[in-house]
Every structure is written in C-alpha cells, then in structure tokens.
Image (cartoon, rainbow, N blue to C red; front, side):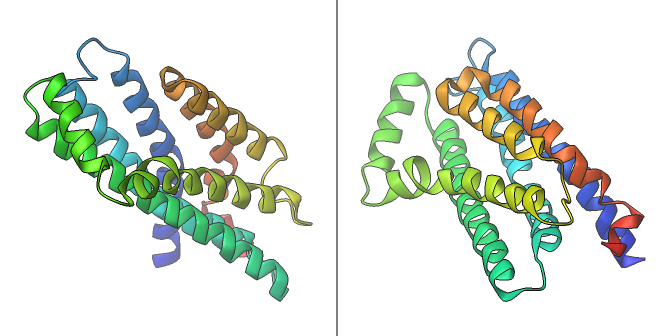
Length: 201
C-alpha cells in the first residue's frame, strides 16, 4: 500500500513539478509580474511549489538509476547529490525573491534590496550563479544514467529534451515555459514508470 502511494505521488510530482515551473514562466511574461505585487508573488509561489516537488522526483530517479555495481551506485549517488544541492540553492533563491517582493514597495526598492542581500559574501554564487546550476546538471546526469544503462529506464531523448530545455531557459528567461514543457516531456517516461509496475524494476 505504501509503495503504491509513493509511486502515485512520484508520478504526480513528475508531471506537476515542470508544469508549475511552466506556470511561473507564463506568469513572468505578464505585465507587472517582474516588480513587487501579486504577479511576482504568485509566480514565485508556483516556482517554489514546483521546485519542492522535485524532491520525490529526484528520489525516484535515484532509485531507478542505482545499479548493483559499486561504481554505478557511486555515479548515481553523485548525480543525485548534485541535483539535491542545486535544488536547495534554487529554493533558497526563490525564498529570497519572495522576501524581497514582500518587502519592496516598487522596482527601485526591489533592486536596492537585491543588491544589499547579494552583496553579502557567498550569497551570489551559492544562490544565484553557481548553486542552482547543480540542479540542472544533477537532473541531466540522472537521466543520462537512466538512458545509457543496460535496462534503459528512459528513452535516449529524455536527457536530450532536458538539455534543450535548460539551454533555452539559460539563453533567455522568457523561454522558461517552453523549457519547462520540454522537461515535462522528458520526465513523462519516469512518471509512467511510477505506477504499480515500478516495484518490479
């Protein structure tokens, strides 16, 4: 019963997590959403919820990717560790953004608060420039392991779609919704494996 429930949760999370990221990307395109106000708050709450849903997604990908050989287990653990570290950094960035949006009265004050917070040693690399990158690298590495293994738990195009979506989002944040749609397609095979048959894998 518990395994079946966990599988359903994982399946839902694999769909909902990128969908919520896409919702954030869509809200971000609306007028006024990049300054303090309802659009900023709603978008970042959707982003935060989507990020938190990657916790069960990463746990399931790690479970599927872990082979019996020690070297394979070490590679899967490293990829999962990178993903979780990057996820923590991304959640931290989103919490900072929500805090700034709640405290600032307008765009000018928002920029001042960001400059003040990001001016603290280590904040910028940990939560903005370096830390969140580990999230993308870890997710990509997990899917590569799953696509390259003998069992081939996901199709080879799953990591390709994640890479393409990540490149699009990195190139222009206006493409977040498109990138999230590619992630959704990439994570759909693991989500389907999250059903009752997953226990036999």
